[in-house]
Amino acid sequence: MPLSLQFSAAHAASVGVDALVVGVLAGDIANDMVLRELDGALNGALLKLVKAQEFQGKPEQTLELTPLGHIKASRLLLLGLGNEADLTNARLRAVAAVAARWAQGCQVARLAFALPTVPDARALAEGIGLGVYRFSKYFTGDRQPKTELNEVLLLNRQRVTPQLKRQLKLGLAVAEAVALARDAVNEPPNEFYPETMAELARKLAKQYKFKLKVLDKPGIQRAGMKLHYAVAQGSAHEPRFIHLTYTPPGRPKKKLVFVGKGLTFDSGGLCIKPAPGMGEMKSDMGGAAAVLGLMKAVGEVKPDVEVHCVIGAAENMPDAAAYRPGDIFGSLDGKSVEIINTDAEGRLVLADALAYARRLKPSLIVDAATLTGACLVALGKTCSAYYSADDELAERFAVAAKEVGENFWRMPLLDELGDQLKSDVADLKHTGDRWGGSITAALFLREFVGDVPWIHCDIAGAVLADRAQGYYPKGGTGHPVLTFLRLVEAFSGKVDASA
Ligand code: BES
Ligand code: MN
Ligand code: ZN
Image 1 (cartoon, helix red, strand yellow):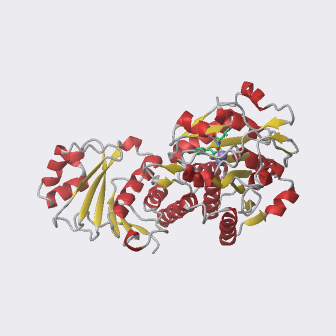
Image 2 (cartoon, helix red, strand yellow; image 1 turned 45 degrees about the vertical axis):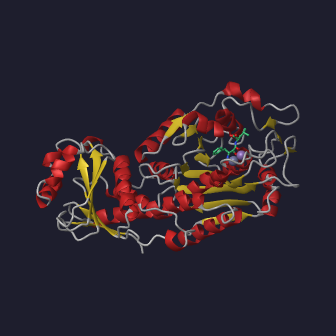
Image 3 (cartoon, protein in one colour; image 1 turned 60 degrees about the vertical axis):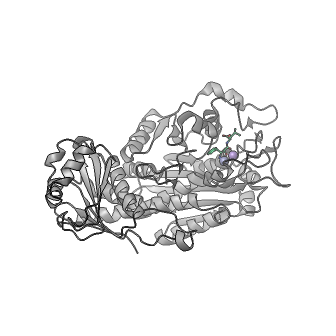
């Protein structure tokens, strides 16, 4: 059942729902209107408990209590919102997700969420939609979820305008787009491989009337994508090259191309990875998942810029036909590449995808790739690296990431590391030494973008989370769909967006 989300003027103590979450601003808690109403119904127990438990309304701080029939809801959660001045859309989205995830976790079907202020209805709806997410497709019997959160009443006495309703609807639709990226990452690699990914693109194309081009294995070879082809040589699953196009009505002002690394599984190939953690390499298509999620969001938001999504999808496997260290291949761009380590497959697939993207003559190329372990070492599992030679562009990107609350840190394109990519037998080697591995990967990619304005995102790490945090669940996070969407909206003149 689809999630219904609406504003309601009901009173917190008497609203007939399974659970009530009260958003509480930090500061003068004893004078919070809703808390006082509830405290009255609970004969003064609530504010005593708040004090005893030192609940101060800090961001995402929670206090759960059992109201034992004194109010209509059978569960009650106080949820900290932090200071009103700091209640940005990013924070609002995160706390709304915490509320929805808590409710979903306690088998709640109907939830009321009381908020003293709603600075942005779309961000709020996004948060709730993102919070209810779970991946339960492969559970059977008792492990199957029995209830689903299907109704959320927003208790806030503001005038409900058609514009507000539209924003709630849009917010839920955006959350669905992020869910598509999460699902794709969570899917096991035996079920989700390049052909499946192309099918998903086909579904999107049909639903939103996008233009679609898919190249199969012979098509990739005929097109001259020799690096993409080489990586896929050792896999029983055939590769796919995917290109989706959204064209707005009228004359679009800009053409943005988003490129995603789509390794549905990365075993490392002949330079095989160690067994521990290899299963996580099902998430090596996180970049592709994000750009597909972005396209779904674009289909809903309908910005007035042209948006392309280009994906190199393959599986990296060891096999008699697999590519080897020492091999030399040409590329779509024309440059020849000496293979050093078959586990550095992502940059090869991306090199051809970027060369293709460049031919579209875009105003901007943004790529997303779970590219290097070195990025994880540098920034940890919750923060991605981004690279751009253009300071102004980098700033725009940083603003977009901050507005949606995703962690990105700018890294330098250090020219002096470029020497590591010099080969004795070909135009380029495709890996450097151990130090600055995320940077040399970025420098390798730069060889294929020419002078098109470009942002490269090394998202190894943040696409998969060890635990739920903010609006990210455990598992596939959907990072960085929202940052990309915000960037698209910033380039678009259309304003219906949350800022
Ligand atoms: N997909 C991996 C990068 C990765 C590692 C992503 C860990 C998420 C978690 C990539 O294809 C890879 O294996 N990179 C190698 C490159 C090296 C051989 C130069 C790496 O980082 O070890
Ligand atoms: Mn690899
Ligand atoms: Zn990889």
